[in-house]
Image 1 (cartoon, rainbow, N blue to C red):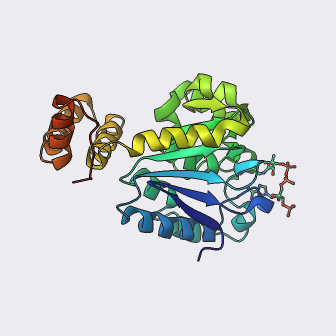
Image 2: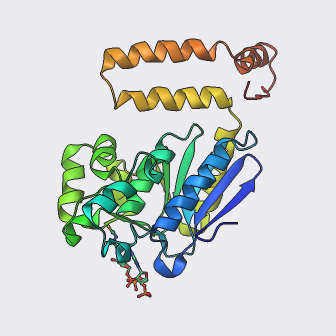
Length: 258
Ligand code: COA
């Protein structure tokens, strides 16, 4: 059904793979359109509770925007392409947890895509950069904002102003990735984490995401107020009743997403 991506459902975990290995999974227009369509499909599928995004092959996660599409692009067409429903923003606003499984080059738009995810898992072979400066442009998929929110201004400035590539160990030290694993264990470790999260209460997961994201987008008073409201909404769910009853009855909860 899709040409540039594959979509696989493994129980409650969906795996979306950018599938252009001969171009190191560079993000062209078709990848954007198909991935947004896939995310809309997954959003509506109650059986899917967690999404993993990765790149095809062993060399690259995503080597950035497809540079060949920059030729002939005018400011107007470029701006039009980066409308509100960019892939980056659709991932950012996806209501279910999203994990980036970074299996190689994670550059430019690839790093921006990983930054739009909730958690980043990397292989020891992964390499990260925002190399736009080397093309005479700047990150345009949220990099200047999300990278700065995640790792701080000084570290973000250095990556963006130099365009230098950093290795996975450095990325972990900077807080750019959550965990680093040997390449042959990355998938198993990512699936273990994804399945653990998939076993939690879906509505509470969604509310957690919303609350955490507010932290970097509002001031503390506003964030604390919103958290109280979201906390109250969690009390309206059947899953809250199930979670509390299961604890009191000393059994494992069975969450239904209601
Ligand atoms: N856009 C379009 N094509 C890309 C690409 C990109 N961002 N990144 C890699 N490719 C293509 C190459 O053109 C090459 O295609 P070809 O075989 O038809 O010539 C293929 O993918 C393999 O890449 P290659 O450069 O031969 O691999 P390498 O191992 O020598 O180098 C990189 C790997 C990642 C260092 C190098 O490909 C690179 O610098 N890519 C661009 C990264 C970038 O600047 N991204 C941000 C864009 S804003």
